[in-house]
Length: 252
Image 1 (spheres, helix red, strand yellow):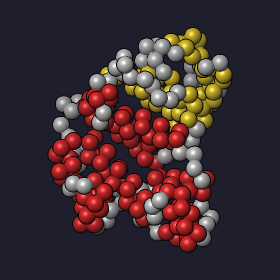
Image 2: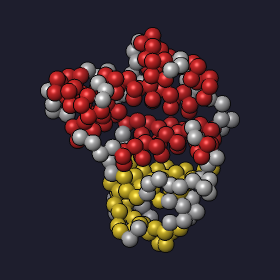
Image 3: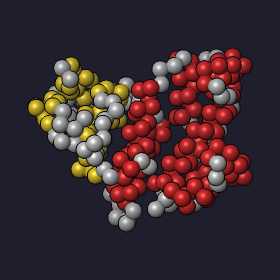
């Protein structure tokens, strides 16, 4: 976790499931606000335009930004993170992020809620780690504007990291022949589909080791590795150190 996110502080965390969102006008706060629309919809006026968040969308409001929210008309479930960042930190992106809630995102949001409501001594440090991941995942989703077929393959893989996946299943999901899917993916990313799956699963394992006290073999299983020895070999190949060494050197 970067020094910036180690120094952040949380103002509040809101997990609301309401018949309709309430309206507010000229709402301005000194903190960073990241809001995810889990289901339903929410409409804001921000940066001189109306933004409607639908299911799976998110929005980032920078500190000291003015915004207006319309009264909702449908049942809506949303989650908001209100965070104070160090004064010298420049927010890298703001505004509307469409269809950015993957299965991994939803899991990490749920995990944040569980940790936030707990009374464990490491609660705040774990919340910082989860928030760091969620924030960077939003930035990654904004940057990823490559081949649409490749993006769909990536999204399917990320949404199903804990499940068994064959090349045929992945290709069928995006309506491509397996050989063509593999060739297209390698051409656009420089790696094979299997290499991408392993990398994403190891990245998820790293994040879970930062925010969870679960045994490493359980984390490996949750990341889709049915063979712990294979997980150990792939982790060391990608990370350069063993999973145990990684946890020891990164978890306070």
